[in-house]
Amino acid sequence: MNKMPLTNGEAERAPLTKGRAFLLLALVILLVEVIPLAYNFVTPALPEIAGHFQTTAVGWVITLVTLVLAATTPIMGKLGDIYGKKTVMLSASAVFGLGCLIAAVAPNFEIFLVGRGLQGAGMGILVLAYGLIRDVLPRELVPVAVGFIATGMGASTILGPIIGGYLIDNFGYTSVFWAQLAHVAVAGVLVALLVPESTLRVKSRLDIVGALILGAGAFVLLFGIGKATTWGFFDTRTLISVLGGLVILGGWLLYERRPAEPLVDLTLLFHKPVAKTLAASGLVQFVLISHAMLIPMFVMTDRALDLGYGFGRTALGVALFTIPTGIASMIAGPVGGHLSRRTGPALVLVVGAGALTVGSLMLAMMHDTTAQVILGQIVMGIGLGAASSALPNLIMGTVPATSQGIAGGMLNLFGSMGSAVGSQLAVAILTVPGVLVAANHLTQYQESGYVYAFAALAIAGGLAAALGLSLHKHRLDADALVAADDAPAEVAAGR
Image (cartoon, rainbow, N blue to C red; front, side):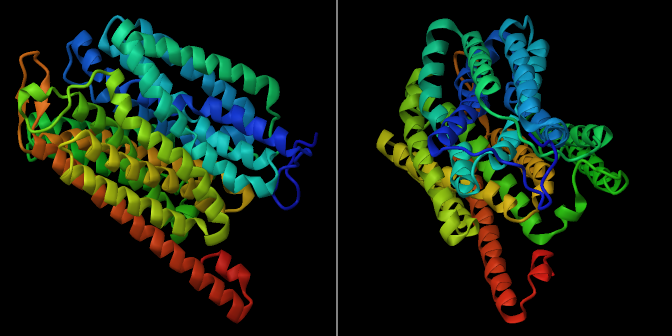
């Protein structure tokens, strides 16, 4: 097959029956599912991990994954453009598997974090999956397929806590890493054997220096946020770390003007629809990862501690509260992808982000009974599914085909940054009213801390909804301008 893009920037597609197309999509989703499982398997195990390694820095188990993912995703996108998306996806899967192995056998917390970091480096497969299905599947199936990939995560939200909880309760935290290793190995082999490679190639160079500066800035910033709970929010060390991280990130933006092929295309970044989509991605992922961390901690808290919340659930018992979210997300994702073709993805983002706002407020104000929390979880699932399916469709509809790799990398970069900030900020907010130390020497949080944290998620969801409204208005204005002036080129350029 031809290894160069067609003249319109599209990949050369082999004819596919609908059944074959959905089989390929299912295999790609199976491989992509390792990403949410790296969170859903691990979050219920955080108390055991903290106890095993005798550490209070357990938040870095989540933060490090998202931080490394943020720095490496744009590179993965570019490598996919250069060498082929399937080839790079399988290489990333191997790196992820190595991280699973190291985390499972790690003798200390430092080596354990190395394994988690490698998992994060391998999780760039998501941006490659978006590009691969766009290049391989028939065009008319792509919007729905993107929705399935974005919220095929719902399956892991259902099965992840059940399988992970059972493994943790019966075999300890290491078992979830062995399970992840088996999963990525089997899925990788199936993709290697049955999924075709994209024919689209784009000559490009890697901005390694830009990735290192970005990673350093994000690490220093998040280190300051994470230490705020120990040092104090206005302690000099906290302020120096936070401001230092921001300065490094500002320097990164200045540096990105220099390379001929930067890590982030600032031309795209300063294009208003793209910038708004990227900001919305960061906000949605902020909500997603924070919510995924807060719920297991909330429901596993022992009622006997008389803190005003908690249900004393085991790791397996967490599934009762996360399965409704997964079911709602699995339904809302493909439906959102379908509606994106009819109403435009911006309006789907508004609905999804609005549901995140409502669901977060419900969890903040109504969490005394199991039924109340499950109802809030269902609304959150609708929001996560709809918003997650809208964002990749938004970015793919905004940039040309030859920029899909880097644009997808930017989308996931901003999403990963939102996740990394969320994993640290959520814990920091929990500590604002003060913390308690239970008899088992584990830190416990005040009920008001959870109220504040869920309220913060509601604010983030509201901001994402506002961005969606702005994007929808831009689309309507652009359509009107095309009709009035017959100037599609100017509209496409955002003029």
